[in-house]
Figure 1 (cartoon, rainbow, N blue to C red):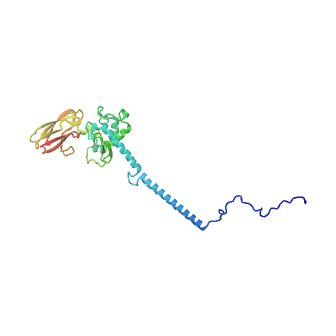
Figure 2 (cartoon, rainbow, N blue to C red):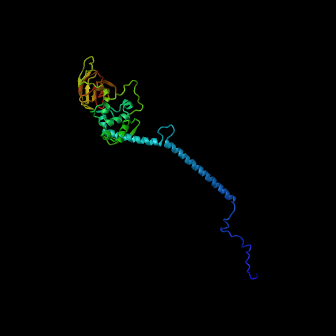
Length: 336
């Protein structure tokens, strides 16, 4: 047994386990100093305040944007969507105006006052007669939709029936015809090329007078068209008549005479010749302008024929003689 080697006995120091990981002593600290703890608390509080402030800013932005996008409660047209929609509508009105001037004004007048075709800017018609659906039907079918006249000068405009305008152009044209006096658009004047502002014709505040006559389905019916080429003359005022003046309609929108003179205080006679087949005309006399007070109105009649109007004595002054149906037809009467 004495020959057996004794295994060395580990010393107490060798039996102490060695850490697998080690670090500098300055990092191996236990606990926090009061200064470090206070700093952490301050940083945490600042972070919470910053987070709350961020949430408040985001919330405020969402509320403001919601009002901007959806509009203020009870305030019509205050939203971004409404504003964008209105801008698109005005652009459609502008395009419709250009289409009207290029295709319709030569018959209906630049301001819708009528000419070869009927008046379009009449408030009574715009209120209850010239509805979007009615206008769509007229533009799609043509003049025969209005009065059942297959030979109407009003042709088909929608390309669905062989016309020149597509569906979008038809909608734009109707937008212009239905535009209100509050709708203002900038367009290029077709005559001068300059940019001008134009407004729609329809007055949204218009209300017909009590007992006003409804607009007839056929515009020709509004003029009490006489089937005969001539009719009875206006009764001669007492005291006899003075001079006789001849006035002729040489086109659907023009008198041959632009002016004539008459004696003050003396009745006179107007012999009116309508040389336009199927187009109603007459001669009326207004004080100074076509929109002034009407002092005489001759019978409206259609077709080639003649009417004799006996006009009562007028006081000295300047008058306008016009066609009631087509006020663009006008001349000057000087009474002296």
